[in-house]
Length: 590
Image (cartoon, rainbow, N blue to C red; front, side, top):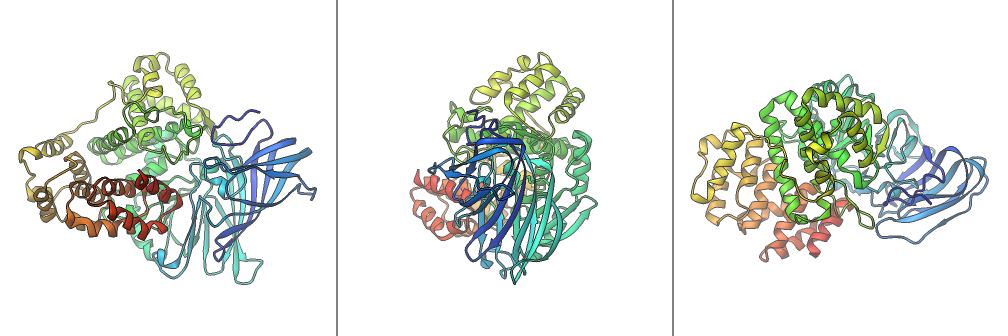
């Protein structure tokens, strides 16, 4: 037995799945997928083959020639799901598994027409990170088990299927009233990047390698907001080397999508909360684009190495941002990120092992310890390495790192070995062990500053002493300015202070979700009753955990609004993605 991932039953020494062929029927009536998954092995195998499943109904397993393969499904584990053990005949090279998903599949969200922008057709989307692919298909659900795939999705004829893969043919389905879409993913991916959506979806080309998909009502706004994607792609290639995924298309999701974005190769998923109307939140698109190198090409081996994905990608995102918008923009972005990191550190506690970069999550649900720590502490560590050796030398290192490990999934230890080989002595010089394996943020963390940043922080610092920004000047602030200022304000303000801010700047009516969420969190923590109606409505408009968690936390902490938190969740929780719903349930149970 050689399980190398504490969150997977897979033993890759038993046999390694390197390609999957899927033929699935999408049934909105029963809220299930059903069909077959043909798992192709790297080499002929025999004996047990352990796979990950969660709430799947397995009806048959056989070789492609029809020889039955004995199988058994173990008892369900609350974190891991249920192990599916196949007993392979000697020389088995492929297994055909017939199965169906559950209506409660943790990776899938089925939306009624009323939950979509168009309001006429239902919608389905997947979200497989971190260990939810096993609820969509039986697989070796570990980043270590990369695979290519081909897929056929049969959907109601009024709907369109899209997938994080190259689109193929489309035509009538086998059943009346359906049509079938085919896809192929020739580059190997880890299971968490398997992704698709079905709904009333249309598209528009933005450049020779980029296309935006969205519901018809959203398409114009999305195409305008992300019109600069080609300049981002060129800027990223300049830093990291050639883009190896052929196309960078993306899908603007329904509002219940739980993340800012998901970097599925060939079809990134994006929250509609980025459609601010002023292109102020496109840094999230830059983040997902950067994942095309750091995360999708070079992938964390396990969830315990997640910082390798996110720390490098935040660093890469801000390099793209700097290249396009300048050093001050990078400094503001880094300051916003550091504020988020400080909140995460406070939430965990300064000595929590989940504030280390290398974690030990065995036996724990990855969704429970997901936070900004691997993102922002990881960014600080990567930035420290860059500052220590110099940009030119570090850029050469990054390109070599990506070339060396492309299309593989690596551990923190493999990164450290590569770092020591390519940049001898640097790890010791910066105290890498303290950064990687000890909690909190070491004292040699880089700082990012600009005159603008210091001005905004100074205004906020003077608030308690009666200082106020000049109203006319503050009305000209950028969205980033407002984020910095609001994040730096005290978490509890007087009713008069809240009324002054809202009266002068109409924050409760703001259309930028980052600004609105920051403001509503302050108002909730301050007991400012005038914003409660908007807070309740906002929690019904968004499904992004970045907004849900701080607002529900603020409402739940305040005895005056604890009942409001419960009532709001009772009203809107059914529309949240299962991942987000579970996170809010944990907050409200605390």
